[in-house]
Image (tube, rainbow, N blue to C red):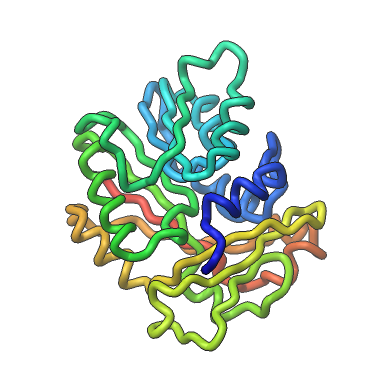
Length: 252
């Protein structure tokens, strides 16, 4: 029986705690996603799979009125609570829970729902249920932004630094809903565990449609850019021309 996701992140929580970029995806994904969230002045935000609050703190600093974070790991949530900026305790709220159980929130409560590398931990049915709840708690005209590992990543990269998922003998299609274990590196050489319940590109579009998002999302493939390669060639060079992450944005 594989170790639970909550147990993995409870155990590795200290290596996720940070105030500045350190993980690969802090460079190749999160800055783009934060810019994509603008404008968020006065917004009420739900951060699903919030981890230790790295993104939520930046969302609040960019002008959000309130950020509510949910994560399955109690250790991650404790770390998030410990890092709430002084004087902003009323703006950041964290709770342990499952992403698809949002009964604590009312309909049309949020202006933005953000899921940064959440759906790679969920099977397709769980992802669809979560997206249905997102549609319920998101106000009309509100935005839903999420990012996942690129569906092709596990099939393009060897199992080596600075980012990989192990697919075993599975193919792109017969590996759907199969758990791929992996690792992602920090620039200081520390590797942290990550997981991907594999889905095809089509699976994300089907789930969005079944959740009631009937307009075409904006889509962005994220990768190591020339700026990344110039910043740290040794770290980023193995990822040259590799699609790393897939980002979606839609409006309710």
